[in-house]
Length: 397
Ligand SMILES: [Zn+2]
Image 1 (cartoon, rainbow, N blue to C red):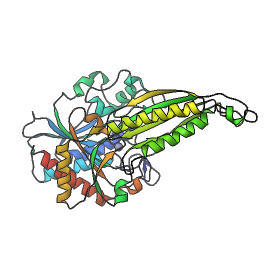
Image 2: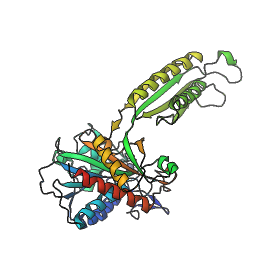
Image 3: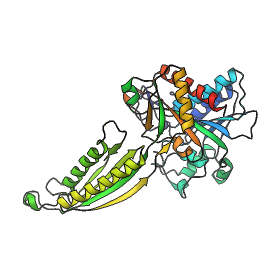
Image 4: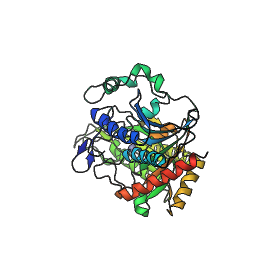
């Protein structure tokens, strides 16, 4: 799979709804068919393999991830989850296991979201959760989502036909590389995901007053950048106040106006990204941060505006699935820590439709969204075995 859209030695660029993704789908389809499944591409551009159960009326067990990549991405993000799911289905077929409920292996369209600036397209699509005007979004070449989907062979007038009715998905399982360093640092190949943390995204605008850097005395300055600097430190202090807690806080952008070396910064705009698996704690921290911003603005005689861009809640994995994954890890003599996912995944969209569980596989130094991304084949094999064991237990439910 890594040869399709290969960049450099170990990188991947396989954008959503493109000829390259189509090639990836064709390769994956060949493996899906070899596993005894039917395969189709739906109107959202998702690739779906189906292993028909004895009782096709039962809600399906769905598993998978995505085959699209970042523009400067690695070989494992998303791919690991799709290929391990196919491997599990293959193993069932090879062992003559025909499950009671049908199993579907899915590669969701445009999980990554960079091409049209909006991700989780296929997983939101099947649940009827696309937003108005989404098809009008364009990529950097001016190609609309609608055109990209049509060129991919999708019928955008027939989205309804590709949606899943409420209750028709029994549960969703996703294996994914961790994309962070926790498992690698703990020297553990597998982690059990507790949930996907909800990001709070703000844009903050601070306003002071411009003036000559050579003449305005320090005590009467209204320097917006000094205020921003103190807020960045505050974000960091707030997010680290409980050692070991999974809270993360980041200021990732900073725009300074008028950005001249001899003008006191008048206006600074920056983003805040605050995430936690514990919504109460995140809410407490949000309050703390608002108080700190108020105090810092007063201190430097600045005015400020906070606009909220995203406020999503954490979504927890189902306890019963987590328990099964833990048991399967124990069977394989793995000491698998529980950890939350900072990044979001297709499972986040699915969490609004069914119970879900996630298995994390260690990735070297936590590097992801980078050609250097690496998970060993030994670790991926262990992950596939945990997924297999989990599927066998879930099928008993
Ligand atoms: Zn991914």
